Image (cartoon, rainbow, N blue to C red; front, side, top):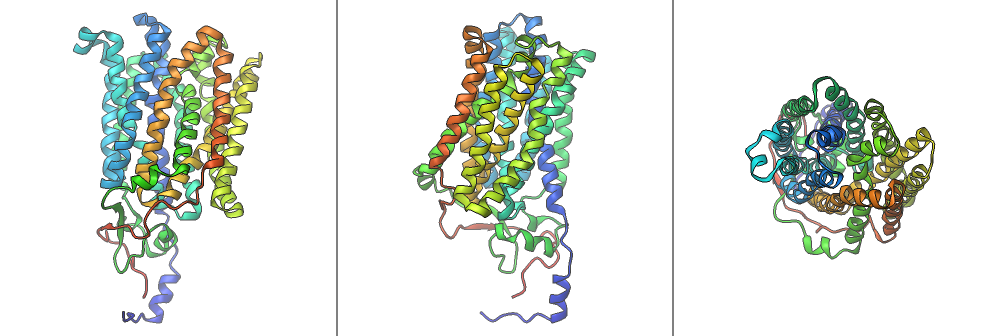
Length: 466
C-alpha cells in the first residue's frame, strides 16, 4: 500500500498538540455513576430498623427482603454485560439508571401497592428490591467496559479504581444522607430523593459520555494517541469496541483461570455484601450504637474503600510492571485479601467498640483494594468482551452475596455476631488462595476480532499519519 505523504509542518503541529483531558472527566463520571448503586444497596440497611418496627418484620423476613435485591442483581449481571458489549455502555447505562431510580422511588409506596394486598407487604418490598437490583446489575460490567475503552493498558487497574472510588464515596455519603433524611422526613422521603438523584445522573451520563474516545467531539488526536494501545489500528477512521458476534465462551469457560477467578470472586463478594446489608444493624444490635451514631459509623467501611481503592489500583499496575501480569495481579490480591481477613477477624473479637469498628471497616477497605484486580483481570483476559466476562463474574459473586444476608442472620442468631464475621474472614482467605491458579496473562480471544465501525464524531486529526 502506498503511503500518503504528510507535510513536515503538519506532523510537527500534531506532535506538539497537548492531549485533551476528556478521559479524566469520563473517569469522574464513572465514579459518580458508581456512587448511585449505594443508594439502592445500602438504603434499606439503614431504613430497615424503622421498616421492621413499623411492619413488625422479624430478622429472617428482613433477611429475605435484603436478599431480593441481590437476587435481581445477580440474575441481570450477565445480560447487563452482554448488552454493554453489543449496544455500548452509554445507552445501556442510561436506561438502567432510569430503571432502578424509578423503583427506588417506588419503595416509598410499597405498602400501598396492589401487590401488597395480594401477597403481603413483605413480598411487595421484596419485589421492588428485586427490580432495583436488576437495574443496578448493569452498572459494574458496563463501567468496566468504559474503563477498558478510555484507559491505556498500563493503567487498567488504576482506571478500575475510579469504579471502586464511586462505591466508597457512595457508601460514605449514603448512610449519613439516609439517616439524616429518615430522621427529619421519614424513610419514605429518603427513597423518593434517591430516585430523583438517580434520574438526574442518568441525564448527565447520556449527554456527555461516549462509548469510545474516537466518538467524543472533545477528544483531540494527542489524547487519542495516549489511549490507542487499548484500541485497534484505526486505518484511517475510528472504530468502536462493540464486537460483532458472540464472546468465545467455549475458550472462556474451559479456562481454569476463569473458573478460579469466578470462584474466588464469589468468596470475596460474600464478605463485602455483609457491609452492604447487615453492617448498620450490626452496629445497633451487637455494638449498641444509636441510630444517629450508627449512621456516622456505618460510613467507615466505605471511607476505607474510598481511601484504599486508588491505592489498590496503583499497587496492581505497579506489581504488573515489576513482576509481570500473572504474578503482579496475584500479589495485589494476596496482599488485599490477607489484610482484609486479619482485620475482620481481630476486629470482630475486640471488645472496644471504636477499635473494633475501625478494624472491621479497614477490612472492607482492603477487600475492595483487592477487588480492583479481579475487574482488571477480566479486561486482561478478554479485552473486547470485558463486559460479558465481568458480568458473568459479578453474577456469580452476587449469587454468593445473596446468601450473605440470610446466612449472616442465621449464624448471628444461633452462634453470635463474632462467629458470623469469623466466617467472612475465612472466606476472604480462601478468595486469596484461589489466585494461585489464576493466570492473568492468558489470552482467551482470537487474534482478530471483527469490529463495528463508528462515526468520527468530529475528532480533529483522529487518523494516524501513514
